Length: 120
Length: 233
Ligand code: HEM
Ligand code: SF4
Ligand code: FES
Image: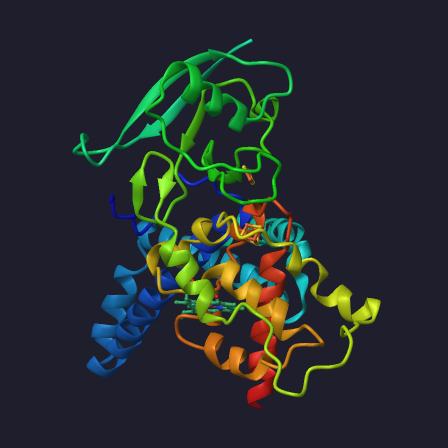
């Protein structure tokens, strides 16, 4: 007998599976950011110079771009998270696709225009 | 009209690893995918193995992965599958015995765990036990399941962990727990309120997309989760 695989990337994905993949990757990214955030804040303990140096390193265009990406991850995770809460507790399964697209539009609407805030 | 089929092949007695074989056949008007693979099996390549029985969407034997998605071969009209080559593979997440024939033991073992039969402790009534239409309505959709396995084998949580009860077993649990005549609700809830039960559902909806009986399985799993949560507070 041929052993099954633990994941089938070729399985046809509808919005539900895409939402789950993005939500999980986003959740992991947020945890990673949380640790980074704790580390950066903790630089305060090393005195004003060390903190200023860290802050300066984090003001480069690369980090600005990453911060904008982080904002996107937060938005998607939050809006899709509300969709999941409605599915979990409000019996909204029948409307999950509509809810996904509402969440997705809200995510884009708050993410794309926010770019100028981060880059200018 | 000619159509191409790209079919998963694996014979444990001959093949080290599985491969895909292409067949091009003339298909008739109104043919389903089952008609096509029957034709291949009867007239082109008798070594092709797959399960089927009723050819009318009720026995559940012919569930397989068609163009990436779990479906019943006998329900899937070829003309709904677009123009390209039609890809046929076994159900994911289960050991493969030969070609499209998978080992369904893990699926049925999970089903067995939820006690998929009526439980009655009080004395049996003299006559048949009736339900009101409202009581029936609650389990009506859930009772339509034909146990084809398309849902459970479409679920990423089940792929990653075959001990996860999976959508079909949970739906069966719902069907009995919410049946006004059944008395095994409490013990079933204890079984499914488990690390390999209810809580592995992440609302991915692959099961609901795959179900050939259009059962909104996710909806019922969430109802069970709500019941488990409310019971504990
Ligand atoms: C805006 C507020 C938030 C909402 C509404 C929200 C909602 C949710 C929900 C409903 C889930 C369960 C998904 C599932 O069952 O698969 C979840 C999972 C998760 N969240 Fe959040 N969340 C929020 C913020 C955060 C933050 C700030 C972090 C990290 C610091 C985070 C990290 C995670 C992780 C790691 C998971 C597990 C991923 C998974 O199960 O797929 N979330 N979130
Ligand atoms: S719920 Fe639907 S997909 Fe799952 S076993 Fe029953 S009929 Fe098949
Ligand atoms: S052959 Fe019975 S469901 Fe398809």
